[in-house]
Length: 162
Length: 293
Image (cartoon, rainbow over all chains, first blue to last red; front, side):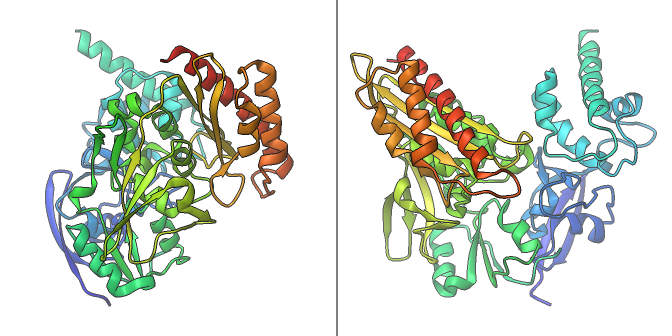
């Protein structure tokens, strides 16, 4: 075992401190050290997008970072978006638009799309499809995911207008 | 699918990073955005025994205007920062337009300009763009620094002139000459995938509206960025008519590139794409050059 490094990181508002090997991927850190198994691991080489987390406000692939690099940073995982009783508006739209079947890819889509919608609250269909180009879903054919994003955007606009 | 163990350093200054690189030589790898290095480590295709992480060197993150009208970009600047920079849009619009073609947003949020240039993937966008823009790179070692032009920097498949104890620390882009136009075109199976072929084009017109200079630099057709010198020569001094553009595109496809076949595309299809993308790129670049003084 190589030398351990301290990692102090805020995940979903909670501060965690651990000592890890530098080779530990951030995805494995979240799942195995913190028990936050909502972040899924698919390809582990940056293609499938299912391990996406929100790192200092931006979507990144947690399999392409080492946990030690998260020291001092803030992360939001799918567990931090909403709860079963109180879903995030985008999660609600996914539910209503049937934007998931097996749901393996869903955490990655949500963590990709939450920062995207914050930056671009009224996206075109092309922009939505470009935003999710780095996330693979083998069930839905993407159509319902695109519909869900549009639904979430419309609802947030309607809410803003009232 | 887990990286092999390595010794880890996270220096906060370039000097400190260079000292680690000098100590370990070829056993060490500099870690920039990690979006290419970490996947190869996950597969254990790369097993560096030492990683020197550059992410805590705050001096390497910047986009600043150069007094000559160009740009200076710190090597650790994230691709997404460049993608959203108004200064880049104004001073290096070719770079600005190429950015969204690089992989996916999640990758660009981590990936860096210096990392992608030093990695020198022949399918990457920024090596070709930096050659088309006459970019220059500042390389630092413990004994001093040197400047290398983009077209001298890339020497082959994933290979550059960087020594193992050197770091690429800064990219300098010169100002665009007046009456210049640009275009970036690529074809990929899916947005964000590696391009089957891409091209970065820069053209400059003389005061009579004739082509003073044209540069076409391709990605994904060779071992590094491939410049179409013969196509450019056919345009020099010519009015940029549709016929001249068509002829130049055909020259690029038949004489300037020698692509190979792989599972993604045949050599013949790549040649076809070189022809089509050259024509589109030149049409757009000349049109923009005519509109810009």
